[in-house]
Image (cartoon, helix red, strand yellow):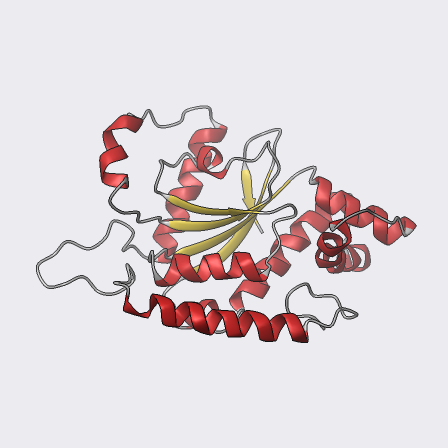
Length: 245
């Protein structure tokens, strides 16, 4: 089975070797950096994101509650620009779908600099995004990774059509669908009630969370050492609410 996309027919050995090799070079390159995740020097204040993973999750979910209630925090964006030009301390790294209706900073009601957001259709883990989350943990000190799926996901719906009708898609779309098909297949076999699209969307979030938890070497170790937590949820476009899965 491919560790990257979850498909039993996809051999990713070559891609994996290339990714791990590139990862080793990247870690060596960043080796001299002052990691935001390192303990602060004596007498210096801790970075603003030096909070427990559970507190980070609580903050973004409270932000979503404000957004869903149409009561977002009023902000003076100009006040923090000079500070943001010097550094960033995101409290969470977000894996989100590229859907134009889903804007993590808004739906979590967070300010610029609070979220380290990576977006791709279908909110799936791939080597490039995984490297970004490694950077978010090692360099920026982000204590939480959150996988954000959403209702009416076109990418998951396309994967359902491919599974059910053997539809053939153009360009690079088949590669995206390959990564989503396992969630559709599991949802078809195990779902008890509800519609297939909603069940597959939630299952895909759970699969991406599980994949991140087992993504060696950086994210897996940080999770096992309890330096970070990894969670996921589904955003309902109609209500604005995020439900943890």
